[in-house]
Length: 171
Ligand SMILES: CC(C)(COP(=O)(O)OP(=O)(O)OC[C@H]1O[C@@H](n2cnc3c(N)ncnc32)[C@H](O)[C@@H]1OP(=O)(O)O)[C@@H](O)C(=O)NCCC(=O)NCCS
Image 1 (cartoon, rainbow, N blue to C red):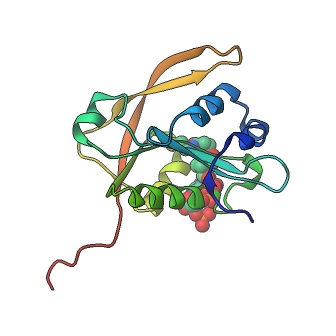
Image 2 (image 1 turned 45 degrees about the horizontal axis):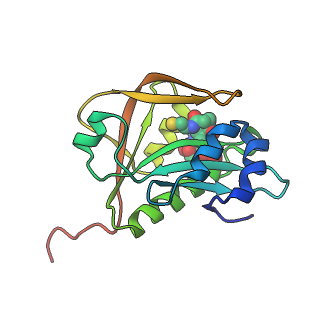
């Protein structure tokens, strides 16, 4: 199996083959690394296995900007249907968490809807914990096939993970 890595322009056909969403991936690939990084797990059959974006700049939502200042946000985690339950999402999340830690950020966060049981189990297994401030109306941007963007919101639980070695309580 290949390794999870930051996506490059040459990955665009494989991402589109797996997930469609040409304009979304073009947008993410065009962003400077300071803004965020699109992670991909390439496949051996010219279609990506999975992808996710880590946003390094302040969130769109004021709640996240205020209460999770400086905390990168993982978004649009997706795995090809035919390769689910094989650890692809876990591998992408691990790479994203290591990247965030390598940039000196000690936490990572994400949003998940109530009805997404698969993702909620995945995040719980990876030690993401829901914050204390309730759900948030998170911004959703759909990149339409004609290049336009459609904006909406969805209620999300905000999950946060502390990264790095645990500090011993007492030495
Ligand atoms: C959620 C999603 C990303 C999981 O990807 P995946 O590669 O199948 O996940 P993994 O194989 O790494 O799963 C790791 C663990 O998460 C949990 N999990 C993942 N999918 C699950 C499912 N369908 N039902 C129950 N638990 C699930 C399990 O604990 C699993 O460990 P196990 O297989 O040993 O039991 C994938 O189903 C997906 O792309 N869904 C559509 C897009 C989406 O909802 N993205 C998340 C947005 S917040």
